[in-house]
Image (cartoon, rainbow, N blue to C red; front, side, top):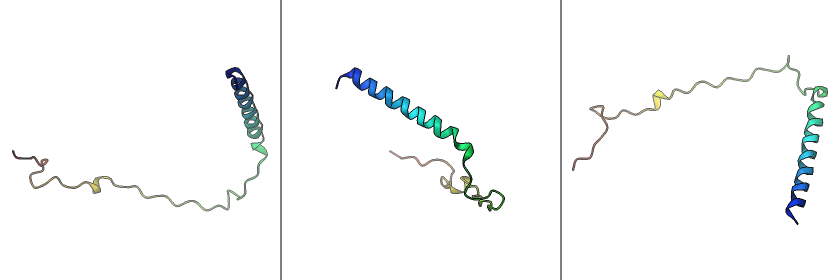
Amino acid sequence: MTVSLAIAINLIADIAIIATLAYVMSRASKLKPHVSVAGAAAQATVPPVRRAAERRPRGASGRLATVAS
């Protein structure tokens, strides 16, 4: 397969994908929801995570440990 033929096939495939996407996206206003919005229950919220509680103390002096030579 030559490079120009590969580019042509790729170009045709790209145009087909864009045309299909444009058609599908233009029909979205005709879709109906499966569940009524008024009857749907609210989702539970996730509690925030406290990152400060996960930190460990550095030691008795509050400094990083050093290696004595």
